Image (tube, rainbow, N blue to C red):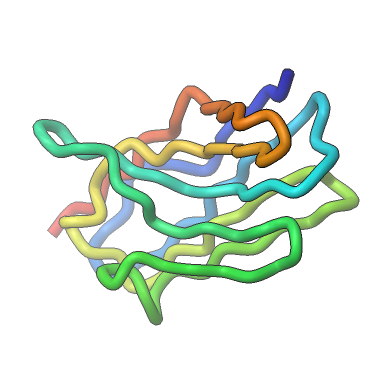
Length: 117
C-alpha cells in the first residue's frame, strides 16, 4: 500500500506561482512513476507532469516551460513548481503513484489550485 498526501494549493493571481508537495509513504520500492494530474470542473482528469524512478520527466504541452516536476527521495516527497500561472490552470491537482511490478496505482486526495485573472 502507498499513501499520498498533497499540500501547497491555494488562491493566486495570474502570473503568480505555487509549489505543490506530495508526501508519499508505504511500499515505495521498485520501478515506478510519480505524476501530477489535474481535474477542472466538467473536464476529464489530465496528466500534467510525470517523473520516473530513474528521473526522466515528461510534461503536458500546456505547462511546458512553466511547471517543473521534481522529487526528493530522502524525504519521499514529490514537488510541482508552478510559475506564470494562468486562470486555465485552475483545477484540483492530484498526486499519483504507479508501481510497474504490480500494476497498482494510488491517488492522493488532491489540492485545489485557483488562479484569478
